[in-house]
Amino acid sequence: MSHREQLPLGVSLSTDIEYRPGRPKPYRARVRWTDPTTGRRKSLSEAKKEEEEAAAWIDEIQVAARGGIDPATATMVLVEYGDSVMDLAMRGLESKTLDPYMAGWRCRVVPSLGHLPVRMISNGAVDRTVHAWIADACGRSTVKNSLAALVRVMEQAVRDGIIDRNPARITGWQQQYKQAEDELDDPRSLALPDWAALIELAEALVARSTNHYQGWGEVIIFAACTAARIGEVSGVRAGDIDRDAWTWTVRRQTTPSPGGLVDKGTKGKRARTVPLIEEIRDLVGRRLDAVGKDPMGRLFTGPRGGRITTAVLRDATHWDEVVQRLGYEYLRRHDLRHTGLTWMADAGVPVHVLRKIAGHGSLSTTQRYLHPDAKSISAAGEALSLHLSVRRSPDGPRLRLVE
Figure 1 (tube, rainbow, N blue to C red):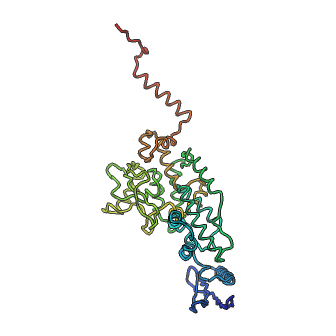
Figure 2: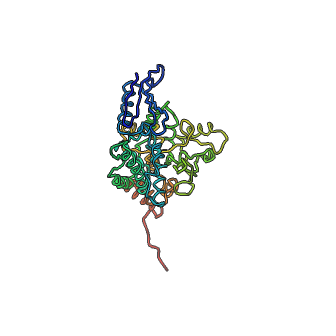
Figure 3: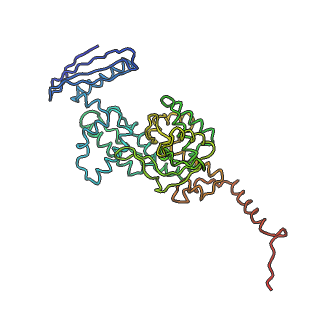
């Protein structure tokens, strides 16, 4: 099926839909036109599952073209469009402002939204993205700079006529930080209840992932049982594991950078030692055996061998969908760390030891994981009485006579 339409400025846009049987997306929609400036023939195509989807894609191109928008520009994904207009979008900014804006664009905007066509980015998509940045512990200034870069690029898209309003101009995101601060006052409320809940979550995430990749479940279980951040789990190397003592020396974490994902020191800039409990030793042993004798071999990777980030884990496992179905709408990847620290505190790990395992700089942060309910307070009184009773005589305290 083909069609030709005469557009403004003498541009002729021809379209067709080709059916190619035996393919996952058998309907190929294609548009062709001649660039009025260069005179060169250009074309765009995209495969769709249904003929209606192919026709809808062509309709979008035609609508944009009638408005004077080059079809190639109209179908650009955000990262491509941003690269093509960045100088215009960021004009007038001083270097001290431009640098953090560009870091936010590269490290947060592009990984989160860069794959989406500019015309498909909505207020809701931006809202969810900003919420994810906050949930991943990005600071206020980091979110502000990243969002500002996105606003400028999308504003250029408005001027170019690709979209009619700027979906990045959202409000209210600052209020989410107050909620995050309230949650940190009671991190216990964010923990999974027990081992069975952790296994259920891990299995559900694996089942929802492409090709049921078992590595995602292993990451979930390991993170919770070691009270580690996802970036730290990604940074585990074979040489960091002491198989005799069953401990893990946490030395590095995976984090986004202007040049892509890199490994750097831990958040506290200090290595720490974490116990590997019996429940995960078989898991760790299998990963060590798979890595072999290379001490720098990564224990945990994505299905293609790449580094893991909290965003990669979220997208690959459809995290938000799974946790909502299981009744843990509040649960974020970082809450696996809260889970491990809460379980250790409930197991009676002394607070000064818990602080070292967590790598907390302040003891007050660690103390938030303790649970001084009425029962534990009474138990503390009984423990003190028992301690004192063995140190005094059976007949009670006596006065020592001084001659």
